[in-house]
Each structure stands twice: as C-alpha cells, then as structure tokens.
Length: 316
Image (cartoon, rainbow, N blue to C red; front, top):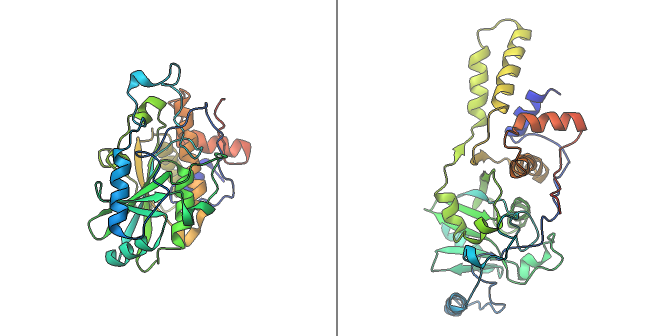
C-alpha cells in the first residue's frame, strides 16, 4: 500500500492494524489530577456527596504548583499522569438522546460523582472503575480519571488527560451508558505534549479545550474534494495519480495543535481507535524531541519502512 493511501485510510479512522502504541515512562515525575484525590467515602445521597466535595475543596493541595515551587530540573520534563501515561489531553464527544436518562445512569455508578461547583461529573478510580489496569503499578484510589460536562441537552464531552484513558473509557462506558441514551461520535485530540510546568499550571481541562483553536477534520469532505478533482479525468491512471499527489501533499502539511475527527468506534471497534491515536502520539513525541517538521507523511513512510506502526519510547 502506498503512503498516500495509508494516510487516507488512517484519517478516515478506517486504518485497520492490530499494532498498539505503547510508551514507557518519561522521567520520574507524575502530576496530580484535578484538585486532590477524592474522598474514599462516597454517599449515595446527594447532600452527603455535596458535603464531601466541599470538604475536599477545603483541603490544602499542592497540585497547581507555582513555577518557583517545582523542583529544579523538573519544569522541562515531560508531564505524566498519576496512572503512568504521557499526558496528552483528549476529549470524547457524545451525542445525547436522553439527557435525563444519562444523568440517571451517572447516579447509579459509584465511580461517578457530581461536582456542583463546576457542573461536571467526575470519573473516579474507585468501585466499578477498579477493574481497569493502568501503567502505574500503584494507582491511588479515587484519583480523577476524567470529567463529563454536558453542553446543552444534546451533547456531553468526556475530558481526559491521556489517550490510554480514552481508550479504556470507550469500552468502560459502553457497558454502562445505553447507546439509545448517548453515543460517542467524535474525538478532539491535542497534538502536542506538555511539560511538567505547563501541566502543573493547568487548572481546568475543560477550559483547556474550550479556549483552544480546534481544526475540524471532515473525511467525507475530503472524499468529495477528491471526487470533484477527478470527475473530469477519463483516464483511470491519471485519476489515481492526481489523488495520490493530493493526499501526499496534504499529509506533508504541519498538524494543527488540536484537531477534531469523527469517531467510528461502534462500527470499527477499539483497535481502529488505537491505531488512529497512535499516529498522533508518535508525531507529538517527535515534535517534543525537537523534530518539529515531522508530519503524518513521515509517519506513514516510517510505517512502510518498518512494516509496523512506529512506536515511541521516551528516553529515561
């Protein structure tokens, strides 16, 4: 398969490959998530949950450290999550068909707690979520894995700090959220990695996405463009040449800092999502290492040369 065709299939989220990107730890410093680890006692009654959240907000926390408080030599290290993955923010978009039923579903899960101060549902590493296995050998109970935020009554987003958490979330919540209530339809990915100092100053993951300039990718629009370009070319070989050149030129363009793509999780399964996200992680790691000219075209070329999806293991 040629490089342009690989690029096209990957960006239509139809790139089928069982290769899964694995990235080992970079440095030794992890960052805490949200405010502090949530209290281990979770009441089923709303009032008690609210009191628990209030007590937690009153507890001292050093999560958002001032730059001067970061240990020497740590500020420029690659940020990691408390569950052991490279921090690369990602947002899952769900179309909501029944917002009341969605709230009811959240209320039945002990690993979901409502944070009234920020109007979000936090996903905690407790109860049902304890079956999930992360890279870190020891994950504190009740660490915040992600946050659900309703955007009106027709959409809810799940903000997470790593691609690995997103992959686990897709399978996990597909077990609990009926597809008649909500379905994941899109994903917004950050194409850059964060330093420890940047991550330490990140107070709201939701606002991180809301304030970002997101470039929406539309595979259907790309296909229409290709059809329009080739509709008046009678020769099949010439049509193919035009398509290949256009896709190659597109793949050589620099990637935006943040992109949104349609997600075909239900039709194509989790392996397709893993393969799609792996390219964004590899490219982000290349940029982190200073190879800022590395593009999706380079990724495909490396894949074809090595016969597998490139993997990036950060230096330790």
